[in-house]
Amino acid sequence: MALVLNLAVGDVVDIADNWIAVLSVDSRRTATLIAKGGEKISISSKYETEIAPEVWVQLGPWKGKTQLKLLFEAPTSVSIVRRQGKKT
Image (cartoon, rainbow, N blue to C red; front, side, top):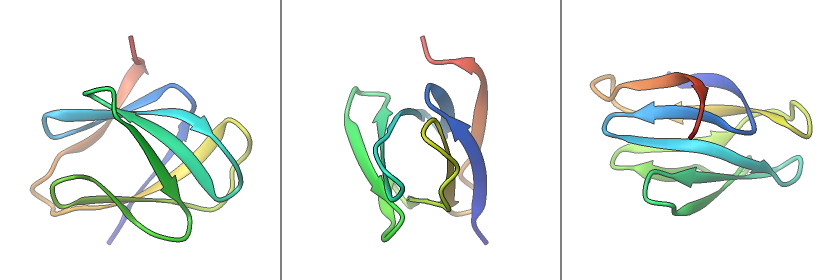
């Protein structure tokens, strides 16, 4: 079962020892994330993208120009938590 998070541009999600932040919503079907190491990750509503070992993310249904739904697939042993506040 997938974990679904509603996120806005700037929101941060901790994934085990890593994190990702929503950098931009590029279109109805694509968005860009930024990872802990500064890597930019393009995601799509058409396919899943591996963002950490055994952690896959896909863009969910359109929410708007600044908000999106992310669908996460990962083993239950991997902690995925939305961080309170914004990335610094």
